Amino acid sequence: MSKPCLTRNAAVTVCAAWLFATLLAVAGTAAAADPPTAADPAQRLEQAYGPPSQSGFGSAVFRDALPPDTGLAEAALATYRRFVGPNWDRFGEQAWLSAWREVHARAAGSPRNIVAELQAITDADARRSVPLLVEAPEDAVAARAALSAAFDDAAVTELKVFTVGDGEAMSGLLVAGRRAQARDAICVIVLMD
Image (cartoon, rainbow, N blue to C red; front, side, top):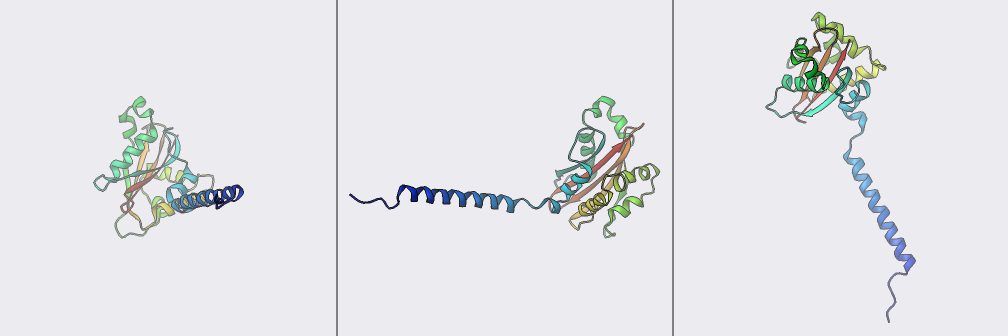
């Protein structure tokens, strides 16, 4: 009769070591696949303005796939509609579109400074809402840094700013940036009364 290669205790030790090594490898792979949140511009914006929402009030950040054949204005309008949520139908599309207009588009080759661009907007209605993005957040310095990280990056190939509101008491802004290489768009929206 031959002796087993490993005693029962040794076999348990080998199995435990293999299981531990496998768990470490899986955890390491997951950590390596997920970039740090500080480097993700949409997550930095979410820390300042909040996650996607259908509340139709306050602020939120959205990141969505954006095929090359979809216009940024079209994607921004879809984001606006999603943010307003059920109130879009309740109060009617006409009310929500009454304030919708493009008030800024970054020209190709122009300096990338979203905070300065927002502050330079001349449209009177839009100017009243600029402080909601650059001054009103709880940590305004972090909010401005998040805006810059998201929209001043060379990866942003198109940037537009729109006014939003219900045509009466509520008004705000939506900033949309296309990242062609990533085939996505990042939008931050703020809508207050």
